[in-house]
Figure 1 (cartoon, helix red, strand yellow):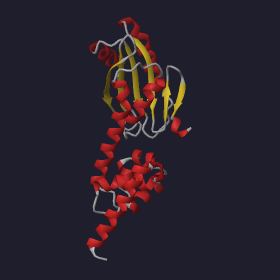
Figure 2 (cartoon, helix red, strand yellow; figure 1 turned 30 degrees about the vertical axis):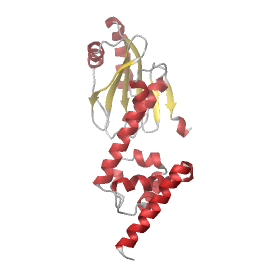
Figure 3 (spheres, helix red, strand yellow; figure 1 turned 90 degrees about the vertical axis):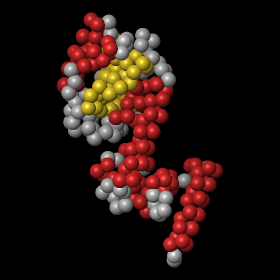
Figure 4 (tube, helix red, strand yellow; figure 1 turned 180 degrees about the horizontal axis):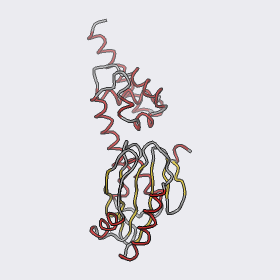
Length: 234
């Protein structure tokens, strides 16, 4: 079969997938959705086998998108172009998830913060600390990174958190950090930091609302002392 014939077959196959996507998205299997996504980065190559391998190895689309770069590049055919597509896709997901909060919705529950935090931090290979700062009505005014750390820790001091809140003229503080590939439960240092900020914040006219820890699949609220499991996985 000539290269032109192969190109025509590939084009026809993808067009049929797109039409099914338009008519009835749920009719597509996970690997077929993945096949279309891969085709955005490598349009001239048949991506079916690579899509099937991604789903086989990582169980589903979510698992594939959450996979670490070092895991992805072990798969034959997954190169720099696809890594760039993965980063872009995850960034879009993270910003989509944070949209309601950026519209200054009220942060009334730990779950509201956890949804946003998991998209941004859940699959990072290194620890990061972020702050969700709110006004007196608990509406978000800032959502920002406080500090980056290493694979197993990120060092912050209570003054880092409190100074950021005062600088932004916030009323309330929610501290968030991730545990890469680990348990969502807080360490002794996490609890000690939480207690120290909780004690210091009122002296500065600030409310310390929560400290939330996220992983790929779970979140833990220290303030409410409960695991915030991903509802998609329940």
